[in-house]
Image (tube, rainbow, N blue to C red):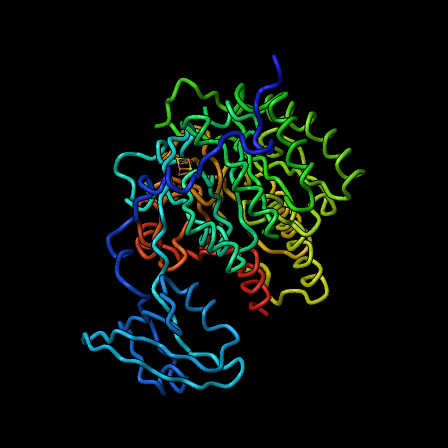
Length: 467
Ligand code: SF4
């Protein structure tokens, strides 16, 4: 018997993938079918306001080409000084605007959010299976959208991508793309994604994107007993053989909540993490010698669970997978050291008044506590760090960003001082609301103290602003 087929082999089958999956890719909401892109806001004194464009108007075409979303608008207007816009006013009127604009002149328009396309997979580790039944509907959205991959670093599997989307990535240069590979062994990839091998085989798509100069970052969700060991070694080796076209691979551990009881899945333990670190460190050393980059990065969680230190700054290069949380702890420590240097150069006027509690996830709490204790000792602040259990999701979920209002309220007895600081990542990016629907104001009320959501930058500002 020959070796099993792998992802970066030459295409295994004849036929066109695009006609196979389009049926399965359902728009998240009906609004995706509306023509054009809706204008959200128009800046005063901008070209948009001179053209009498208004919130609620839809731009249907630019120079005769259909506009599907704001990426299309951006692409089709880029570098053009003479434009014809077809607009459907919110009143229902149709306008045609002939425009001449200065080079680089901005329209001053903001647009509606992109409605994500959804995936057609049944991944055995899908986070949607780990949500409590009453979780916010948005937590059940299985987004799989190459536009969001380009814009925000969201991972896609490419199994359900349409020909139209493939063309768009290439034509509009939506690079980089973030692709969940999980395993280059096709049978294992198919098993993990819950699809057949035919569907799991994205080799022709990957080749086409790479040949078109699209940069790819890969991801492996590491599931003990399934894609570790020899499968992982092979996956890293196959992906590294495409370096620098494939720029990096993030290896992140499976996360199980108490609701995900699939018997095929085995929890990630500290022993497993130590073993993976030992195995992958040897591969990383070899890759650094051959490629000049670590290339295959382990998630921070793996180092923290193993009870060891995260790698040094140089390990991460330019942090190619920071959007996936890889290197966040090292980056945090680095920024914290810069803050300490500033505080030592310019000591706080009344450090004893900085008296409060920082709440964070269980995994990060020991690292943060060590840093804060050093700060208290050197600068005279009176801060306290408390790790908060995640009872909402349960299982081995211990990262700060998944803490809910209820979890934080349950830690109230351990909050001391004049204020509490919570991770900014527990809030929605555009609203002060947590995963369980609790609002920041409600948490503050329940604590009877001001509660400040912060990241390291706002924490620095907060401290330096005390002088
Ligand atoms: S690709 Fe897999 S993990 Fe991601 S949303 Fe779809 S089923 Fe879930």
